[in-house]
Amino acid sequence: MSPRTAFEGTVLRREVLSDHLIRLELGGPGLAGFTSTGVPDEWVALTVPGQFQTRYYTVRSWDSSTLVLDVVMHEEGLVTEWAQTSSEGQTVGISLPRGSFTLPDNAEWLVLVGDLTALPAVGRITETVFDIPVTAYVEAPDAPLAGYLPIDVTWLRPPAAGRSALAEVVRGIDWPAGPGYFWMAGESAQMRDIRRHVRHDVGMDARAYDVMGYWSGSRGRQTRAVDPGPIYARGKAMGKTDEQIWADYDAARDGAKHDPS
Ligand SMILES: Cc1cc2nc3c(=O)[nH]c(=O)nc-3n(C[C@H](O)[C@H](O)[C@H](O)COP(=O)(O)OP(=O)(O)OC[C@H]3O[C@@H](n4cnc5c(N)ncnc54)[C@H](O)[C@@H]3O)c2cc1C
Image 1 (cartoon, protein in one colour):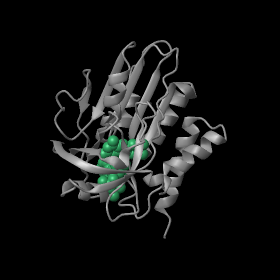
Image 2 (cartoon, rainbow, N blue to C red):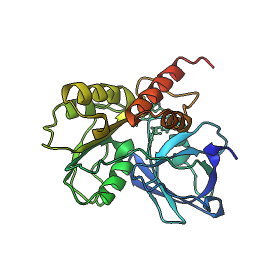
Image 3 (spheres, rainbow, N blue to C red):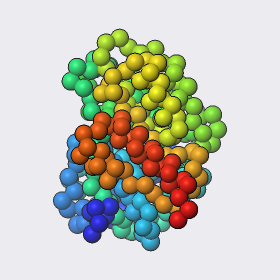
Image 4 (cartoon, protein in one colour):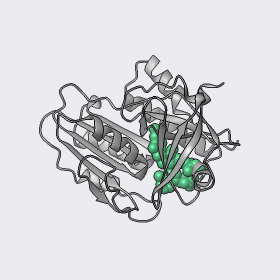
C-alpha cells in the first residue's frame, strides 16, 4: 500500500451538516493502527473509489475507531461529486496524518481565519486551545453552524460563489498586543498575499504565523494533485520553516497548473 493509502476506511455514515458541508464518518478494520498526530489542524489525503488522485481533508476527530471528515461541496470536484452521491458503505484510501499548527509557548493570543474548507481545523483548534483568548473569522456561504465551534466566531459571507475576501479581512485586523499566533487557511493566492502582509507590513516573526493554501481559485479543476506529504517531509529534512515549506507547496501547485500531462 502506498503512503497515500496507508489505511482504508469504510464510510459508516454520511450526514448533511449544511448546504455546503457533508460529514463522513469512516471506520472498519482498515483503520486499525491509525494514530492521530495530536496536532489540531492535522490532515489526511483521501482517495475515493475508482480514483488515483487525492484530496486533503482535516481530521475533524478521531476516537480510536471513527475518523470524521467534514467535506465542503463545491460547484464541481472529484470528491465533491463522490460525496454528494451514495458514499455510504464504500471504502476510501486514507494517508498517514500530518499537522502544521504550532502554538508558540509564549503565545498570549490566537487569531484564526479561514473559509469553509478551514472550518474543520478551526473547530478542532478551538476545542484544544483554552488558556489564551481566541478570535476567529470564518468565511462561509452557509448560515453559521450551531454548535460546530465551542466559541463565538465572526461569520462572513464570501463576495461570490467560489470567491474569497479573507485577505481584505486580515488586512483590517487590529492585532492584539504581545506575542501571539496567527493561523489561517483558504484560497492559495490570498494566502500568498497574506503571508507577505503579516511578514512585511505587520512584522510578525515566522514562528508566529501559519498561513496555508487549501485550494486554488484560479486553477480550475485539477487533473493532477500535488501531494503536500513529500514536500513537507523534504522541507523538514532540510530544516525549512513551515512558512518556507508552504511556499514550496504553493509553488508546486502553481507549477501543476502549467503541467500539460
Ligand atoms: C491541508 C489541507 C486540509 C484541508 N482540509 C479540508 C477539509 O477539512 N474540508 C474540505 O472540504 N476541504 C479541505 N481542504 C481543501 C480541499 O482539499 C480542496 O478544496 C479540494 O480541492 C476539494 O476537492 P474536490 O475534489 O471536491 O474539488 P477539486 O476537483 O479539487 O476542485 C474542483 C473545483 O472546485 C474549486 N474549488 C476547490 N476548492 C474550493 C473551495 N474551497 N471553494 C471554492 N472552489 C473550490 C477548484 O478551483 C476547482 O475549480 C484542505 C486542503 C488542504 C491542503
